Length: 88
Image 1 (cartoon, rainbow, N blue to C red):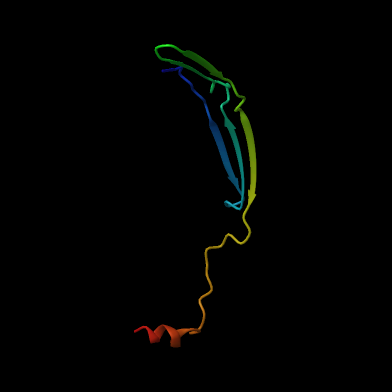
Image 2: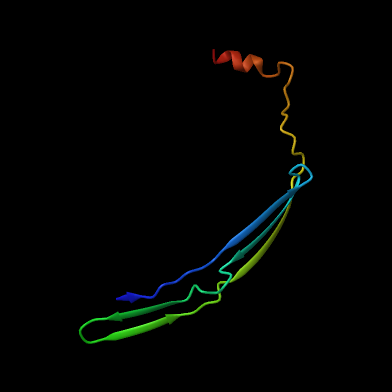
């Protein structure tokens, strides 16, 4: 059995704005459309050749906005201390 070589080139660009609250991602897959494959299978009596060609190119644009990006968490005034002391 013989397999032909196959290759693909992917690229991704990312940019964040407004203190990482808004981001844009542009992604391209198999830019040159080279992910085709040929297969040659042979044995004593049979030879089979298969050519696989598919358009696997894709372009993806992602826009993302994060609400409430602050990392501060609620730090209560002792709520739940009774339960925490139970485990001590």
